[in-house]
Picture 1 (cartoon, rainbow, N blue to C red):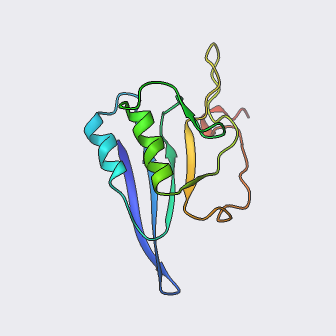
Picture 2 (cartoon, rainbow, N blue to C red):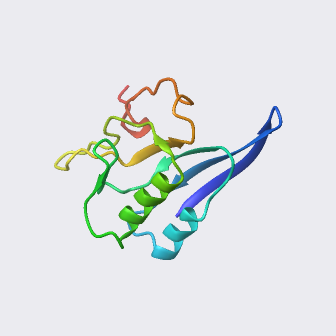
Picture 3 (spheres, rainbow, N blue to C red):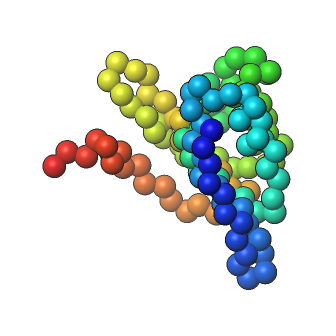
Length: 124
């Protein structure tokens, strides 16, 4: 797992902002480090590579002891809102998947998300 965290203070309120990438081959130890976060206000964005999670239906494919289920459970325990509603990865001969998430601890923190062509796929 790769991540960058920034703890900021605005108008005497502290917030933790994180940008994460969890590789499909991430170790359980790395996944557990992410689950230990518990700040005051939260904004977490990234490519989490958990296609097993469906936040819309609140379901996770697989066993409760596997990383996707543990991750989903932790986001629910922290009362995080997941704001990405469309698929974020589409590749030829692969099932479209939602791998990127934006989490906040406030439902109305994100007003709008634009889904654009990935930078590596821009055709000029």
